[in-house]
Length: 285
Ligand SMILES: Cc1cc2nc3c(=O)[nH]c(=O)nc-3n(C[C@H](O)[C@H](O)[C@H](O)COP(=O)(O)OP(=O)(O)OC[C@H]3O[C@@H](n4cnc5c(N)ncnc54)[C@H](O)[C@@H]3O)c2cc1C
Image 1 (tube, rainbow, N blue to C red):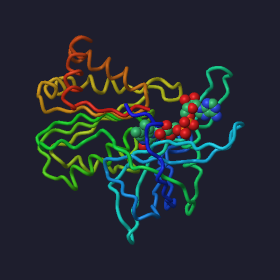
Image 2 (cartoon, rainbow, N blue to C red; image 1 turned 60 degrees about the vertical axis):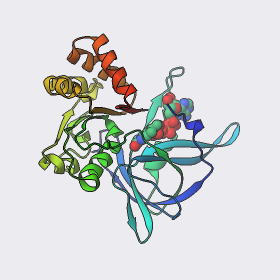
Image 3 (tube, rainbow, N blue to C red; image 1 turned 120 degrees about the horizontal axis):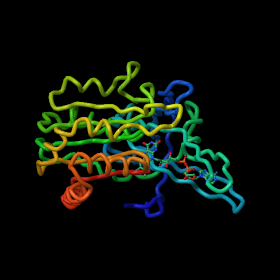
Image 4 (cartoon, protein in one colour; image 1 turned 90 degrees about the vertical axis):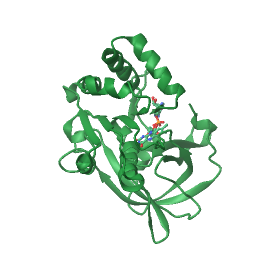
């Protein structure tokens, strides 16, 4: 896994906030879709990449730069020669384990608070591990939690609009706390439901049974409910599993796939085969 500190942030570029729209309703976790107009023509960022946002911060030890990555959440486009990129940002806050105080995440709050016309500094681009397989008969199981939908939205659009003629199955499993937080799969914004007409595409959503109690999102149950199809897909050597979202997702998936395959050992073996064949990729944050 690449660490943020390994990434080269020497090249910096300016981008203007062209749009910032809250996708979730008041009372739910705030997630914003932000459109950036990159001001530097030399900055190129593709659909399967992420880029960094750099924020100067002042600490008791002096000035420092806070760097965080965001996945491209739509097909990049060009407007009057300037690259336009969409990102999906969740406003984060954390409770400090030691003093119990609530802290705001630096980059996510910075981005969510930016207004139209504000300038930000970006760097990159950086690779995402979600490669479109060369063989269009390949099967893809895409699993996202929260803003983990961002790279998969771009990925699915890329497959159906640019790669085209996909023959393998694509199954998207997406978990959010409540129906209104199901980004791009709800009544107001059903961007991803546009692909329901595609013979090869199906999406399944999972919610938290009691969102106000922070009960876990039942992504494992949604996956286990499709056990027979998943077992079949996993029996083919051209099946890929791609995972994105916050860290809770890993243990949830290990549990679900172990249940589906009948034991932890069987899943561990299949997962190592997927990893060895470069058919398992994840971004966990
Ligand atoms: C490849 C990749 C792609 C990603 N794509 C997306 C995406 O598309 N959308 C998205 O929303 N996120 C994405 N992320 C996550 C994103 O990069 C950030 O990690 C996230 O937005 C939180 O960053 P932050 O600066 O707001 O929080 P941070 O400031 O980095 O806070 C994170 C940690 O610092 C601690 N902390 C925070 N504030 C304080 C404080 N004041 N004092 C002490 N401790 C504190 C918290 O305990 C927490 O563990 C991605 C990550 C990766 C690696």
